[in-house]
Image (cartoon, rainbow, N blue to C red; front, side):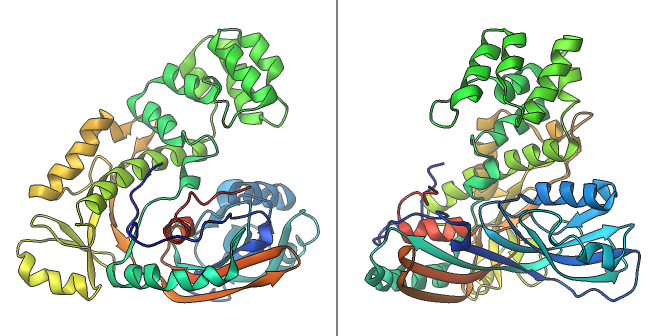
Length: 411
């Protein structure tokens, strides 16, 4: 993704991220504390080397509960030290605390009861402390000016590259799902080898699939590619792409549709950043109230822009869906341009394959809080550490990209 930065006129410090998991720390800030009573056990876990889905699946197996009975407020990367809160139905605090040591890479920090399941987005924000490696420590002074610009105008609220998966094609999978194009989805999922990301057996399996050598592709896929093997096996058995697509986990399908929404949002935001209006209200904008997430139609820009300058409100962008409220005027023209380029309509987000995706609005910018800078040298070399808090759903790598001015490379 080549997304225009806000701070293009300021030099960056270069560097790399996530050479070690310990260099990337993230902790959820809960929206509320557990009450101490109820049918769900809330717990804070610390995980290293596990995605949120990995952690949920392994906890479900260890406690013998359905994965659907485990709730989470956000998705956290595997290549990080990540602390997040889960809710688990059908178990006890003692059983949850006993998970420490049973699941490699996972520790339970506390457990307490609460009355409701934790839902996506039920958090106040995330606190990050990130070490940028392969830098000159004294370059930390270069960060003050771009950070001041970001604090003044806001951080473009792009979705980070991790939303689009290792191959960067989650949005293409989502688009195929939304359009009901099963053959296209299987082609993206199982074929089209990319030498930049696919190596060895993966590249060979994808090339065989493109040649319609399904049995050869099945032999080539390694055992770790469980989802690809399961989908391909269903295709070989039935000969029907639709049946193969139905073998895909529902959580993955939702993730892919969300990635499509994210890509379209990024496209709209990029146009507004390039046009200098991501922090400036347009007539017809749907302004987002940061205090409560409500939106309202901007009819008088002169009256509302001072609220934007005070960061009470911001222009919003689309998370497309069949019932999403649309802006008017110039703001609508920009959004429609992105929608038309993708060849989609609002009704495409309502089908048997994906269910009903209503859509929502998302602020085009956010304001990092409690920003701290440090620099030094440790046993693993020189580093610049950037610590900050972001609202839920915003990406630390977007802020790091503004400061590094290179793609936040992950070795």
